[in-house]
Length: 155
Length: 264
Image (cartoon, rainbow over all chains, first blue to last red; front, side, top):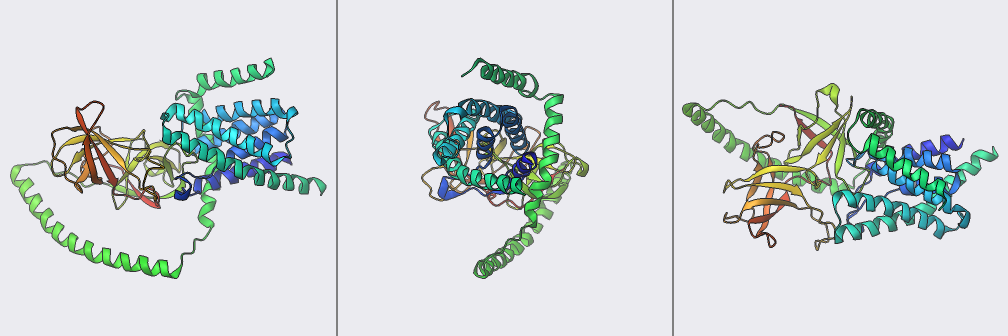
């Protein structure tokens, strides 16, 4: 059941992310949901499943982007490995842990993108904005996916 | 971190370098699979109806009527100019240039990443699309096709820093290279997008509002497509050899819904 929930979430969140408009009041960035999904997988499933989810998420995101194919998958994969190894010291149910995991995954992705497109002051601000928006959307994502998992488990 | 984690990270990096860091058969096939898996979900967004406020529709209608009147006048005057131009070209023995053959396409998705600027369109290889075809809309140049699957294609927008077009200042005929510029968080509160035209002769006289068109060099973008208009120009402070020209794009890259691919 986890596989169905996570796969459906991945495809729906990717579709939403690819249709989201840029928000001028947010510095011209578009809200990203997929770093939150990777953080959810890394703090919820065992390492192999979390890594598979991270790679699938990265490849799906890259398939709908002009980014070098596989770059996002690589970053999400590394983030998943690091988060799963740090999981023992973290309480995944705490909102700030979820926020931190989402923000770090997003920041890692932005950093790798900057390595390709170039670093600048504007890019640094954009990195911070993206990390902050990912931090904000991650706890609701955890709440929703946990609720769906719980609901399907009790039936 | 445990040694096992480092081994996994090392394998990920190695796998990426070997199979995906450059275009290979593996990366192309994998790319195709993920595009075809995710595109049906992206197209689902079309099913969500968009309702505009009546006041907004009235205003839009009024603007379109005014634009229509002005365009009809322009068409009449341009038709006459076109006829005269054809006659002059015939007299001078110019080879006749065929008009562009275009194919309309609908935008079905934007770039999922915030760091690259591209759109996905609902036309692909089965419609005759291939890489490096120019994409325009009614306002001007949009970008070029960078990847194609059977039924969809990805268009790299001119606003992306990796997309460059050889250009001409229409009045002074001064050449240069136009590329997108990352000016988010600029002083403009509405984040007005601008392009940069570089390698422009430092002695050229550039007028504000002058049109910038494609030069036809490079083989991707045909000559004469409007890119935008000049906002300002200044000599590059670092090299002092060229002028950097700031351009306001003709097309609104934030509201792309329908585009045309130039097939020939």
